[in-house]
Structure formats: structure tokens, C-alpha cells
Length: 420
Image (cartoon, rainbow, N blue to C red; front, side, top):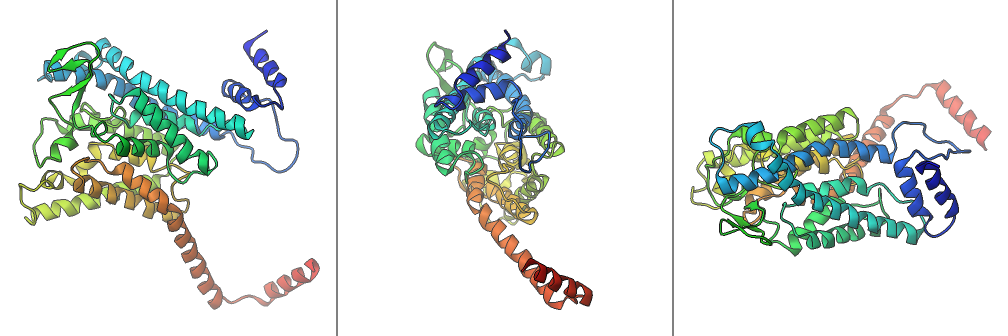
């Protein structure tokens, strides 16, 4: 007897019982469900929630793999010094980098999925509904947006908070008003701010420059944003380093190239909104241009703590920090974002605009994209409301000036009579 038949027998055995949702989730995750609709209208399409989530995960996997290599690369480079002549195969894609990154990053992935899915299963059993696939993407996003040295117990607490408070209390997948992954990130930021600064290069087991077991301390070196937030204007990383991702930062947010490819994949598969992505990029460029203009007009002195990030080239904001990652994978969340086409333009523009604004005016933590997205999650329904109201008003005005043909009027009156 094969595994599929065994799981089907277990599913039938527990059918109608308390643990049925848990077994159904395992069965449908591994195999296609053998149930079909028998009555009522339904949509016949190849894509469902599970396939949609799996597509997003496929777009995130390259960022995860790159982050694993980059964690090891930043570790050895911080200890041995960054190579003067960088070779991708010789210095980055190495077994040592992959192994150190894997034993550091993969436990974060395991804790994220383990705690989050356990809570999902628990709520499904208690409420008696099917297990929802919404956490499949959230479980992958969380490890990619946190510093690599985040303690696992801290992450577990944050995941539990984000899933319960940010999602389940609203009714589960499709009902939440805040992005669950960003809710988890916000909890970590406000509850444990010293761990979330992300302004130092992480080195595994390093203390005072010497490797010691059981120690995890940051040593010399900073992220680009951390360096600029101190008022500095020059750093050692090149534009190619920032674009390809050979810089310190959160696990999956460093490679702008892979994020761009992932965004194109999501647009091609019609899962993410290109309107939100494009408008967010325009908004970030607009805010960056305003700050560059302030610096060019010499309205702010060079010794100001805001000078470093204000003088940073407006388009380079997209190459550092989590701005590009947030625009592609977070702002485009179909549940918490705007639903109308015009609303998506407004929603995305304000996210990009405020992300750079918060980044510049918050030097203690020079990253504002997750705060901007969470804020716009709250205002997304309001934006859609006024967009719809505006459309109704315009149509009502056109209706007042419209000329209705007599035959059409007679047909409408006849229809009303037949209905009565």
C-alpha cells in the first residue's frame, strides 16, 4: 500500500472528528484532493490559494539561497578582510560560506515554519475549519527580513504574536488588515530594539576578533544604512556590490538583482501588482530627489545627523536596506493592499515616499519600509473607499447629462412590469 492510500485511509478514519482539519491539511499538501463540487456555480481555474503561495515561495527561494551564501561571506570577510579583487566563485560561492550560512539561516526558517504552522493547525482544530495555506509565504518571508543573529526564542515569540494578533484574531487568511510578516517584524523592532538595529556585520562565534564557542557578537563593520545614518557620505561598497548583494544586511534583502527578477516573475505570473511596484519606486525616487535638492541648496549643514542619508543618491536608496524587498514582496500583498487600480497607484506611491522619509528622519534605525507598509495597510481600505466614491460621483454626473433612447426606456418599464 502506497503512502497516498495510507493517508487517504487516515483521512477517512478521522473524518468528522476533531483532528480532521490537521490530517486533511497534510493530505492535500502532498496530494491533489480527490473531492469535486457537485452543485452550485464555481470557478474552474488552474490556480488556487496553495498554488499561488507556492509560486511566491519559488520567487523567494533564490533570495534565501543567496542570503545563506552571503551570511558566510560576510562572516569570513569581516574576519579576514574583504578581498581586493573579488571573484564570485573563489570568494562567494564556496562550501565554507554555504555551510556556515546554512547552519545559521536554516534554523530560523525551521522555527518560523514550526511555530507558525503549529498555531495554524491549533486554530483549525479548535475552530473546526480547514487549515489555511496563508502562512506558507509568511513563514518564508520572516527569515528573510530579520537579522541573521536573531535569537531563535525571540523569533518564536514574535511569530506567535504575529500569527495570533496579526491574523487569527481577524478571522484568518484573507481577513487580516496587517501583513503578518511585517507584524512579526514590527513586534521584534519594538520589543527588542537592540537586536533589530542591524547596523553591524554579524560574525559567527566571534568575540574581540577571536573565535570562541558559544559566543555571537558583532565586530567592526556596518551596513550601508547604518554608516550613512551617522552622517557619513563615503563607504567602501561599490554600486555593483549593492546591486548584486555582496553587502551586510538582513538575510534576503541584500540582492537587488534577485529581488528584481522575483518581482518580474510575480508580475508575469499575474500574482503581484505591477502598479504597486512601479508607483512605490516612483514615490521613493521622488522623496530621494527632494532630499538631494535640500542638500544641493545647502539648507542643511554637513555635520547634521541627517546629512548622510539626505545626500545619498536618490536612486541608490533602492539598492540598500529592505526597500526593494518590501516593495516587491510586502507591499503587493493582495489581502492587505489596495484593491482598486487607482488606489494601487496611490497606495504604492505613499509607501515609497514615506519609506525614504522615515529612513532619513529615523537615524537610530535607518529603515522605514516596513513601518510605511504597515501604515498604508491601515489606510488601504480608506483609499479604496474614496476611489470608489469618486467613480460613483463621476458616473452620476454622466447619468444626469446622458440622453436615454425612448426604446430603451420602454424596455426598462416593461421589464419592471414583468418583474412585479
